Every structure is written in structure tokens, then in C-alpha cells.
Image (cartoon, rainbow, N blue to C red; front, side, top):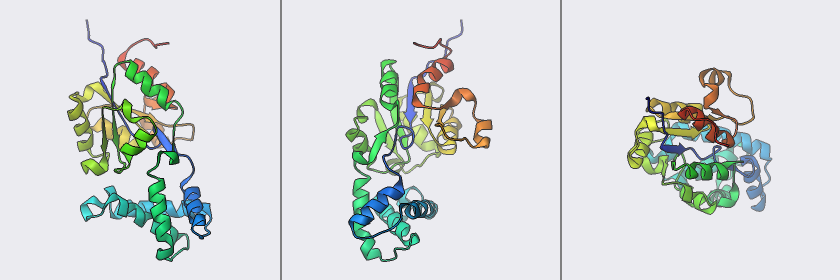
Length: 251
């Protein structure tokens, strides 16, 4: 009689998988700027942030650690560049805004759980699954998870800042497997990025699930990911695990 597959470890992305910002980045930036006497439209700041973040990530990947930066300085530079692109070129005026934003984005109050996150994590624990975080986040993540009441669910938390390996680098997935003493074929990863999460985990032999949400899906991704690997919401995870393991759905 063939042995059925039994997943033992689930690794989780965090941002836009378990948590999301309560308000769009542009609104957060505009609000803090206003409190410091600077008037900038939220839409302009949101667009500028996207440009600044992409440029900073390209020039100084993984928070610039290999260039001697700290993640804090990396983020302060992103904020300064965001306001510069939005038309505020007085770095001295923006500096206290940047400090406040860094502090605020460290606070659990700035974040909220995605629908179904708590129930899904509880359901995974009830099944005896081990859970861990594998995230391209910075050093603030542990405190955010504690503040939101999620840290207790995870055996360990790996961030790209702490390990030096941002997803999809296979080393961060291998480190998770090593810490959990689990073979790749008995582990699955859940995340919202096709490249970093879904393909990154598959490349080391793990199973993968892609959180796709309600919005339109990139046709290339839609054609590459089997339907049974897509999660329209986190509540779809446990039934998807049942299918993966060849079990009848648990009611």
C-alpha cells in the first residue's frame, strides 16, 4: 500500500499574505507630512514611493547590507527620495517625517491581518503542522508579529535582513528546512509573489501555494500555476492541503 503524502512544515510569507497596511503608502506619507507642515498629495506620494522603492531595491538590494547600510538608513533614504520625486526637495524638512514614518511602520497599529489569517493559522496548528516565517522583511518584523498576536504561531522567523538571503535565494528556504529538520518534499510555502514565493520554494523541492486575492491575475502566472495551487483567500489553504495529501476535505 502506497504511503500518502503528509506535509509537516508550512513556511509563510508575511506582507500581503498574512498582513497588509491599514492605509495605502501614499496616504500614510501624506498624513505624516501634513503633521509636519508639508502638503503633498497622497496619489503623488504613492506613485513616487513605487519609483523610489524600485530604484533603491535595484541599487541596494536587501536593505543595502552588502553596501554597509542598515535597514533603517535604507528606509529613511527611500522616504527622502519619495518626497524628492513628489516635489519636496528640502531634505532637512523631510527628515523628521522620515523618522516618524519609520517608527510608525514598526508599529502593529499600522498593519492589519488579512481576512482568515488567524483562523487559518489556528487550523494549521490544530492539525499538528509546524509553521515558520520566511520573509523579505527587515528587523522590525518580530515586534510587529508579537504586537498583532501572531508570533506565537511560528516556531521561528527568518527574514532576509537577518539571514542575508532574500527570496527567491534558495539559501533562505534551505535554512528554514534545516531549522525544522524537514525534507523539502514534506514542506510547503505560502506567499503572494509568483517569482519570490511560488517559484522560489519550488526550486528547492518544496510544495507551493500562491495567494492570488480577488484582483485580475497576470495571464503568464495564470497559465503557469495549477488551479489547485492558487489561494483566492487564506480560507482556501486547508482544503488545498487536503487535496495535496490526497485526503477527503475536512468539514
